Length: 356
Image 1 (cartoon, rainbow, N blue to C red):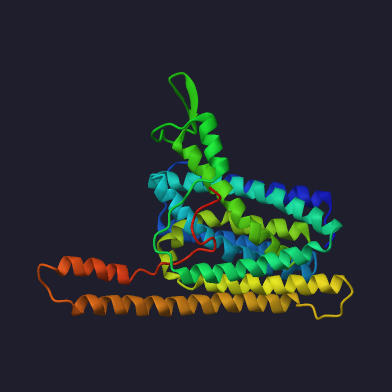
Image 2: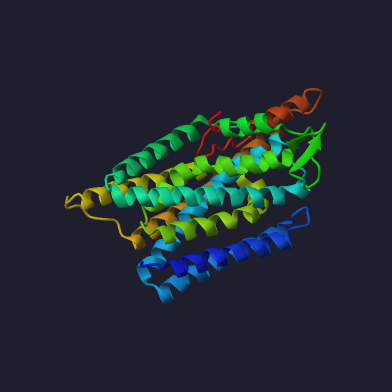
């Protein structure tokens, strides 16, 4: 798809306007209700769908199909980000009324960093076609690692600060408590960051690690930087509302890692086949409609099997608790039952350490 600089500028201005409206509506710190989160989640999905249909009308079916495949892939991979976001919020004890502000700024930081990644990736692909072999191999390795980590069934996960975040904290210093929505304060004459600023940076910089597999994944579906950027933008901008909508349901998606591993592995194979085709080897290429069908099918199956597995685990835990005799030891038995019922879902980064 041939995209002019004018369209690039108009698109960025349009996205900036949407972000500004979102910021103005949620500028006052408050607890986000499920209803509010649900409405805004639908709004962002509808906006993404309208954009994809716009590509179909004013562009072509290929561009529209690539956008929807990229958006759905990025959205599903972004859901896995929420596991770590929950851990970050818990580690820094972020007040509930400040969480939406944290996520808004954190996601904006992530979007800027991803734009840099996308520009770099597009430049590399334009000059070195063999990079598809590396991208494909990396995604296949990531898929294998996902399955391995999911089977490890890590029940206790903790967020560990990455080196960049630690160096920033050391450079500026951090206040010992939150000061409303302030990002910096004066402490004994020295300008220091508040914990709110630290959490925002943690969200933004942590997303960079997730971009290491999500960006190659979408380049496996399309090599058009415009589609890659817009698909990432729409997927990320709706992530904040999705956090409040399904944050408490994440552990019920017990098979999410397996589904994501299948998607990443599939796109990895697609990249390798594309690289071979570009090298003159006569191999079949996987079409966008087929890719879209596989991605959607895997996500539907993963969701259904997760819900079924979750119900079985809940029923087993309740049955185990009911079979224990009441008495002085009942309290201990109840605790053990709770441990037996823990889903122990593993995220695609396994441990939530981010390069510490």
